[in-house]
Length: 322
Image (cartoon, rainbow, N blue to C red; front, side, top):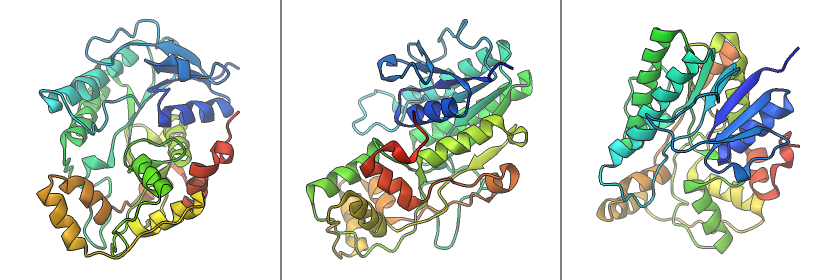
């Protein structure tokens, strides 16, 4: 019997490389699509180089024979935005590019598309004692999360018109060895031994280890009950910002150097410097109810928070990588 073929977009990225490796380990025939195929291992996947993912991307031949597409490629957060119209730039890739891919996949006979969205579709933060859930009204808080929500709506329309099965997954911050963005900055600060005025923060935030996200995406790609569903995923071990820093520092073998400082003054500093959103991510809570995917798909994170943080320092030997 031939192996099921799965195509992964954004295959050379932080998450994409782990997803491709785990799919290969489980016996799937993997095709990895990326602008930079030099990062892809031929033992793990068949590499296909493709240009920009937008409304004009030519998917001819690439999708033939695929049973499922895991769509990771996206225009993500830009630290130093220089686009004249940032929202349109996000829409160009995340909305119009996603629609083009979905319609091309349906035309090629692909049965299912797993779309990696963002918990930002639910909002920036949760109130004390509250958790985000799939039933919440969408509240995207920036151009990126708005484009992700619009892509979800477009995919729902394509599914209705073509019969393509769509599964939407909204993860929070994804961490692991080589993670970019805010997590990479956290690692850099800890390695430099810089003091951080965060010991007084009393928040709770849910994260997801990249190995857990890969496992969840494979469940969404393969489980019959996932078709047409939206799932919020996380490790299920909420942690405060100072405790995360302490645990990560411990895994790295360096001191955390967090010290007490009034959070109200940090918020004021964020407002005065135009950095309210980044400061809110450090100080605010973001908790997730991942019960739906656990109930419907029987999914449980295979790695703990502690294991994930250890892998950030000691590499990916905790994963089933070749």
